[in-house]
Image (tube, rainbow, N blue to C red; front, side):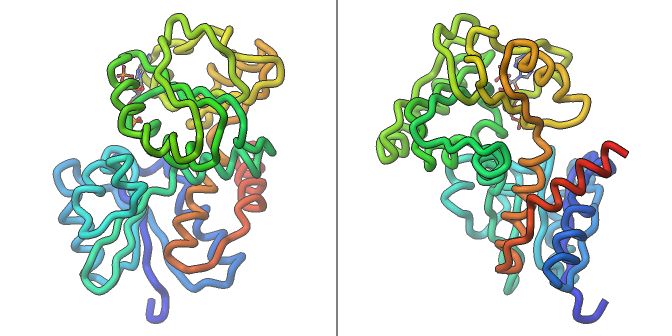
Length: 279
Ligand code: ATR
């Protein structure tokens, strides 16, 4: 593989990952010479796997469940986004050092604004969840200056802690940021984002339909069967439903940009991926 830079995605499980396919398309469409594969990493072997990959000449990794928090800690340097979220999905390996970044929230914002065509500035946004996925999204959402950004979560104290950590950023963007009671939210929103793993845990829709306005955009960070319940619920209540496939492709595009300095055509690759999954 002389002349071909190597990248990978590490996770456990990993067989389901679409990232190798997405990055292969980005490479083909931009003319970048790189290889990208999926690595199943033992639950207690993450740090060793990253070092081994770096020592073998690997240039970068995407990191998925359950290693995003460990990736943030392992890095020698980290972006402001990683410091805010406490989680990383992208490692840049150079000069024997590990730099961590987080492109998940950037991908979500790009998909909402460019993919769904909904600018976030001045909008009312509800973020459901307060785990790693929600934490990664909050700072990039605030950077788009919504009017109000509410966070609700099954465990309300976690939503309150997440809000407290971001109040300074909210001031900068002039956004009203607050935690909301998940069972009785008493407000409705332009954009609703499901960042919980409720569907995987066999739970129902975490919020009442009263959070939706006619024509609201309701996004799930998941795609496929895991997102279907939320998407059906949103559609049944007059909202526009959007799964997490666009976020997946957009976060990959942001990682590709970090590694290669070239922005790949994310919209085209999303269209191709949707067609592939539908066939
Ligand atoms: P991730 O990194 O994917 O965000 P996580 O950090 O474990 O994973 O967070 C999972 C999120 O889904 C949390 O917001 C969690 O709520 P709690 O903080 O109360 O645990 C939420 N969640 C998981 N199962 C849920 C369910 N059955 N109903 C509602 N929320 C749920």
